[in-house]
Length: 247
Ligand code: CNA
Image (cartoon, rainbow, N blue to C red; front, side, top):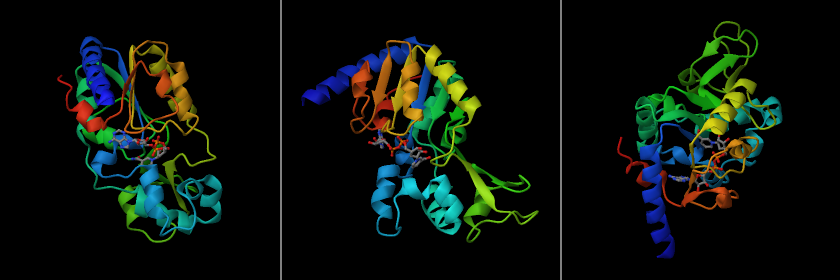
């Protein structure tokens, strides 16, 4: 009861801040896409235990990819390539806020391309995208559909070299330019909305340290290690929050 009241009071303040600001930045994670039917990491973990011998963090690591590319691709096709997924209300409202000149950018840990599919233009993909795949030998582009329909380790149609997704695997560094852009937008934001992320994966989770304002909104279904840092904490599904935004 008590937390419901807090949530609804916070919701009112949230809508006021959104209404008044034209310098909003959104920073999100896998929870943004669960309402599009793409499981987040923990759900993946739960499902996967029956079918895979290693946790997702291990399979999605650089060393595992090098040593066991076939097992990597089995997991990747099964769990990471959700090419039929459609943007949900959160993706759509964020795109509308940008179009209305209120939101400056979306910083995402997701690799599903759904923000762009919803119409967002300024999207900083910290962990890359499943929609981009390149031959490791000749850099030929290969579509995600081709990866999905290939078997074993996908081969380049031009030179036969192995194809690697443009996804930042564990043990790999983030793209420096994307990281710098994300820091720029977060450090200049008036309202920072963080949503659908456990804030457990670094260096992405550390981006919160660059925020200089006093309107940090944290929207997540479950508790995060950064809850105390929020000026507004809303423990609800993103869809029920974002559907209330009138643009
Ligand atoms: P995570 O660690 O799985 O955390 C997700 C968080 O979102 C959890 O705390 C959930 O409680 C919360 N959550 C789930 N659904 C909702 C909802 N509807 N509304 C509000 N909160 C919700 O995922 P993170 O993004 O924090 O970071 C870990 C990895 C997961 C990142 O590197 C991603 O690249 C990776 N990942 C991405 C996708 C994708 O692209 N859609 C899917 C699965 C994993």
